Image (tube, rainbow, N blue to C red; front, side, top):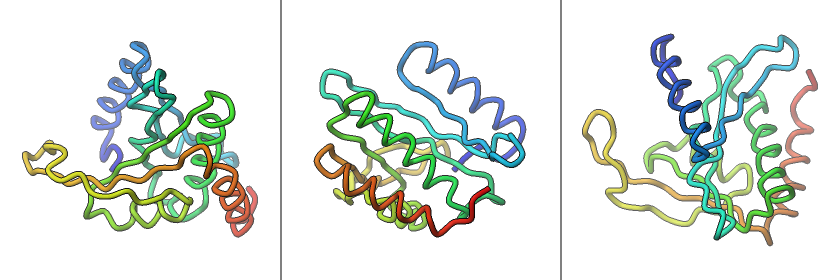
Length: 158
């Protein structure tokens, strides 16, 4: 879930920029082409160059732009960069095991469900989260890319 108010957005941005400065994450803005406005974000994170592995996470899109194809297009761009520019062997995604919307979206972009990491994280409210893991690996990338490109044809062009 993304920032919920201006103060949350400011904190989120400070962390994203600090992590980018240290090289541990690479944040991306999702921009609405029609207005030029930032409408969401995602990051490369958990970057492990020696294993050519990274995670795409901290993804959020403003409510008005959900189900519009913008996140799918952002994932196409990020996955293309990860596999075709950075030479990744694996790109992984994780979400709360109870977040059915995210799990459905990850399966919808062609990521493979790998399982549940039980008691994986302590959430800000103190609850313990189980995380559902998904991935795309290099050998799957051509088919995943073709599927993403074909699926984007369902959405109107800006």
